[in-house]
Amino acid sequence: MTIDLSEQLTVRLRDLADQQGRDLDTLVEEAVRRYLEDAAITDVQPADVAATQEKLAGELTDLAPWADQSETPDNETQ
Image 1 (cartoon, rainbow, N blue to C red):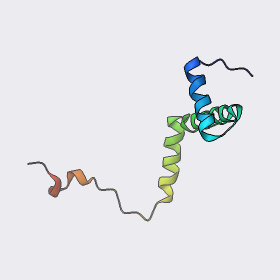
Image 2: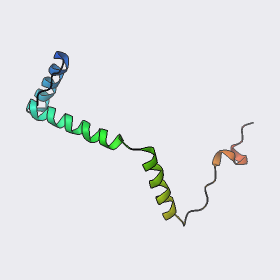
Image 3: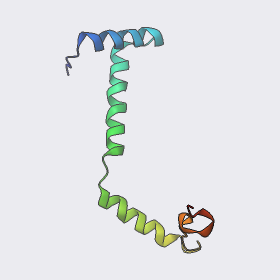
Image 4: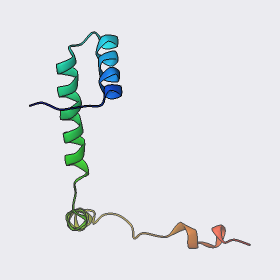
């Protein structure tokens, strides 16, 4: 596969490879792999998050009910 990058980005990648003593192709491959892994982690559907939260909440039966600390008399604004 061939990827065309701007001259500025190419120079930055070459400088980074030189600084780290690494092969340029290996550095670029790792950068693309990390980008794709990060994108996969953040590519989450809100409905999936909600379903997981509901499932986990059902497992936490030993916890006391939630109390919103901002509504307690000690935290009232005057």
